Image: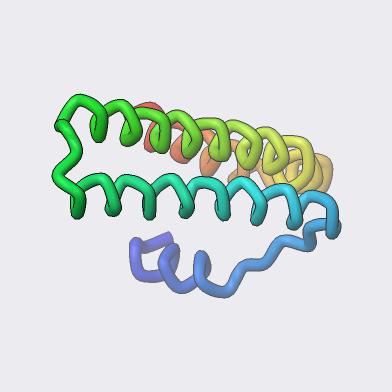
Length: 103
């Protein structure tokens, strides 16, 4: 699959999430958004660099936590279902995704 096909496919693929999963993800993202807005305020108020860096690390940690949950859900649902259907290409996609996350 070419890079353009992957981008097009990525924009069109969907995943049916149950309401609890969706709500939990959105709540996590809302907290992260709040942290980022807080960092912006710190910059606007000329807060000490190390204090800002500490908050940036907290946001990075929160995003990593979000990724872990999302990846786990993806493996348990999308990948498992695809493998059961014999769609082995999902394993290669998963490996590629993990490599990108680990950069």
